[in-house]
Amino acid sequence: MIARLPGSEVAGQRGQGNLAVRTGKGRGKWRILRCSKCRTEFSERKGTPLWGTTMPPKRAAAIANHLAAVCGIRKSSRLTGASKNGVTSIGKRLGFHAVSLHDERARDLDVSEAQFDEKWSFVEKKQKQCDDAKPEDALAGDQWDHTAVDVESRFVVSLTVGKRTSESLVETVADFAERTGGAPPS
Image (cartoon, rainbow, N blue to C red; front, side, top):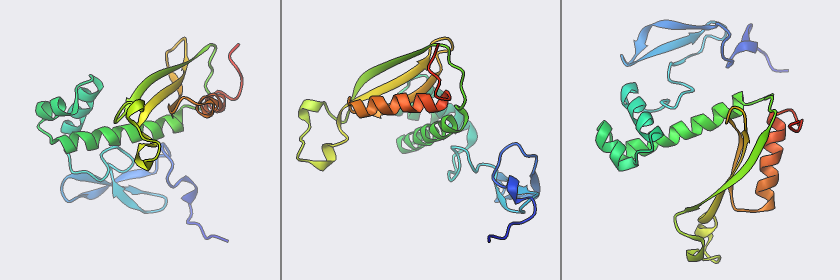
């Protein structure tokens, strides 16, 4: 039997009203939060794309805005004063955070009409330049974005990236069914 602290059933859950700002700040940069239930302390950046970085929030927001406006890495770097590696790092962090947020929040959706589509692109090089004998080329070449979109709101319910195979299609349809309760649109 695992011993639990009183109130630990809300530990790690959002919106439970159990967080308070600790007096004093962590290294003078970020606020330190304390859980009133389990007494753990952590940075206010925990669970955000900025967790583990020292980049100022304004610069990270500027990078996010430039990337959302389809600026490239070099252009975003010049406009924000961040290094190319810094822009790439923030872009990856934002992407991973968006995926986890979508997985957490896009549940029990009511979709009256759905549109399934696919879009072609390539990674590193085109498929005809890939060599099947090279293991590093397994993820290179043709890649497809298989999407399931709510027609009314244009919300992307499901997205699967991969080769154009029946497995990718089945994965997209299964993910869509899981997020919408399994009920097909009427």
